[in-house]
Image (cartoon, rainbow, N blue to C red; front, side):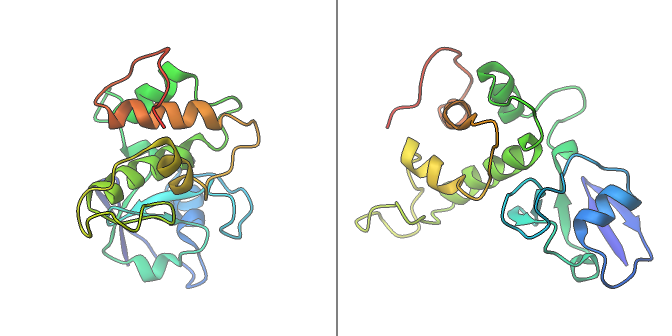
Length: 177
């Protein structure tokens, strides 16, 4: 089987029970995605699979043969951080940092989902189907709700995502609700 991770194809021979999370951490030495609950409830292991957010602890690696997987290590372009990584730094949107890789991958996914018109449970019923969903603070909170932060950095995470939504980072300014 071949896992395409961060633009690199990795031919692997794995036990059919190996999760994507374990393949990343134990076979590819990509330790950004964290093993939190190992039940898909905390979001620490969130990666992007073909551009969509996924809990890598719940995905069997053999079922991802040929799919494009992006981890936190693949968000930056060389030495240039992804705008969300910059915003998280500017906003101090992490404390211990354990959940940060999953938070970042989830935030990348939510920006794409909203731009593609995928509604959330707080998207107004009057929203134009298929049109980009405006990312209010409530939308960001709802879309990030699958990613837990034990340190409670949620307000700064919402602000960081809002900064990127607005086209850059602006330390000191909050997200409009």
